[in-house]
Amino acid sequence: MDVSQFSEPTLLVISFLMFIGASPSSVGGGVRTTTFALNVLHIYHFAKGKKTIKIFKREVHEEDVNKSVIVTMMAVGLCFMTGILLSISEKFTLMQIIFEVCSAFGTTGLSMGITPDLSTFGKYVIIARKNWNPILLVHYQ
Image (cartoon, rainbow, N blue to C red; front, side, top):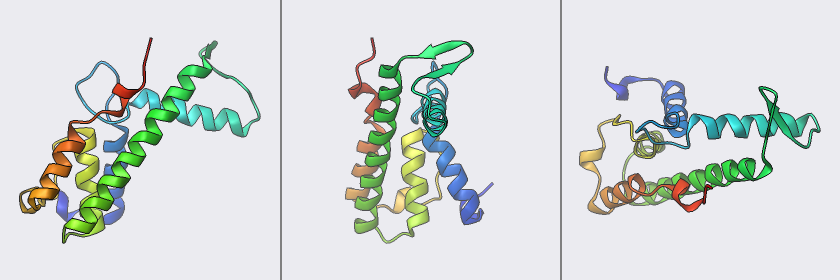
């Protein structure tokens, strides 16, 4: 199917799913499904006034929760900055730019067809975005 023919809400949902990305031990990109799930659990437990996260009768260490939040915030910041740079340098709609940035972040290979028409600067921004992983900056033991 031609992705560029999808409605904007559908493109936003697909972009969100590409941002979340794949599960651990896979070759896909994104922040990872487990990181996203841990962030959702953190918000849920915080809203209930609980100090710890317990799932499947096990407690999640506070350090792991902090790492998941850091990875997610760095990823959001990086995608945001990439989107800003591309919106300044390119002539495409914001939806097309968001989709391309999330596709590069999630290494999905989907495109709305604008990649060949990006300026040289825009192509370098996408390449740099695709090859930089915020997870590498957070030390896991």
